[in-house]
Image (cartoon, rainbow, N blue to C red; front, side, top):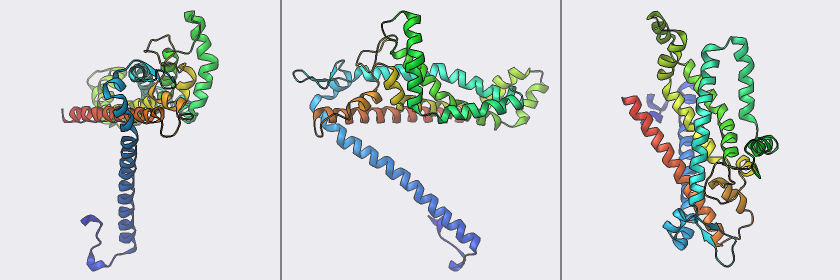
Length: 302
């Protein structure tokens, strides 16, 4: 706080006064961001714990049957949702990260300026397309293709969700990775070339390792987008509470909330269980971010 207190006996020039005001404004914005996170956390904990206490933590997290609308034998096991979210996110990362990274290398280092200038607006446009449009295209194009290719009764499946998620995370991975690659000092590449390395060897063995923190940040953004997506997945995954299988209809944590929250009665166990799913999803994303941040910090220290 001392940095925010004006000096010179309280007399400030207009420039110093404006700088002090901006510092205070930035501090307020930082506290607002923290306050929102705390409010969301407290709300999810208060709303989600009652269902977990009533169902039981083990039965809730490791139960394999979800039948929230069954009047005679309701069940609230979310293990299929957890595993589906993990498999779907992992599959999207395995497809999207290599493609996005290679595309970023191409745009930052290989592509002629005119070609790069033509591709970047397309990447930006991909980032601006609403998720429901991705889901609609997936329904109309991807699902029939999967059904005919693999001779399935229906194309809505975990595979379709993985492909849609992989496409959706590409823009953020490409943009952030390209920015990180361009920020690497030219001296690194010139030294590598002077030692006899080829251009591609330089890009992959010198530039990419130097930009690994930015590339890792792009992966974090992609993971967050993949885990938190609901609408597009709701349209292509089938929305059935099955244990995850590549060619069967599945339900993610996010789609479970989106599909049932509209008709769940206020105060009912079903609605509280949906809040509990939101709490699990929130903790899941938090743990992933903490793990990735610790991993990146160790790499920087190493």
